[in-house]
Length: 253
Image 1 (spheres, helix red, strand yellow):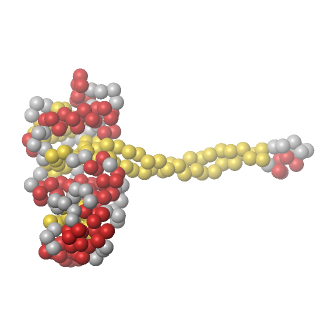
Image 2: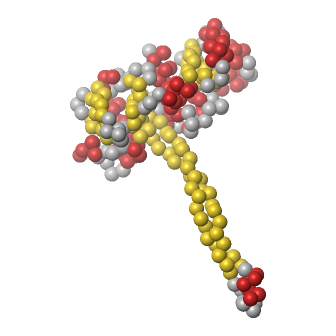
Image 3: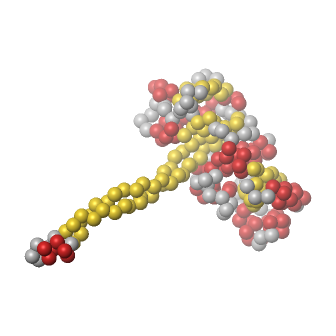
C-alpha cells in the first residue's frame, strides 16, 4: 500500500481547501477537515504505486508539499526495542531483550515521539452455571433440582501502553515501551510506578537532547486518527504514523 501525505502548510484558507478538494475530488468541506490542525496528514492510499505518484504530482503542481511512503517498507523496518537503559552523561546506553547493546549520543537524537499504543486481546473462559433441571426435579418427586451447565465465554480487553520513539535521522528508530522496560538504570531516581519512571525518562531525554524536536500528538487517539485518515486504523498502523512524522520532520528541516 502506497500512502500519499501532505504537510507543512501555514494556514487554512478557502482557496487552499478548494485546491485540495479539486485534486482529491472531494467536497471543500471534506478537504478543509483534513487541513485543520498541523500536518502531516494522509490524504490517500493506493495499491498501485503509479496512482500514488500521479496524485503526488498533481498535489505538487497545485502548490502542496507532499510525499509518498510505501507502508510495507515502514512496517518491515526493524526497531530496536529497549528493555534496559542507563542515562549516561553524554549518551543513552541501551540493551534489548536479546542482549544486543548500544549507545546513542544525545546529539544524534533528532525527534522524540511519545505515543499511545492500543492493542486488543481476547480470552476464552469456561463458565459453570447451575440451572433448573425438570428431569431431576421429576425424579426427586417435585423437589426443585438443578444441574451444572458449562459454556465458553469470550472476553475482549483493550490494553494501552505509552511508547517513546527515538528517531535518529530519517528512519532509524529506537522504541522504549513503558511496560517492557526495566527501570533499574535510573538508580536513586527510580520512581514507585512504571508510568512515573517512563515520564521521568521522557523528561530527562527532553532536557538532555535540546536539539531534538518533541511531538506528543500520538498520545491522543483523535490525533492519530486525524493523521492517518479514515481508512487506516491506528491500532494497526502506529509504526506508520511514526514514520510519517519522522519523514515530514526531515522534509521540513
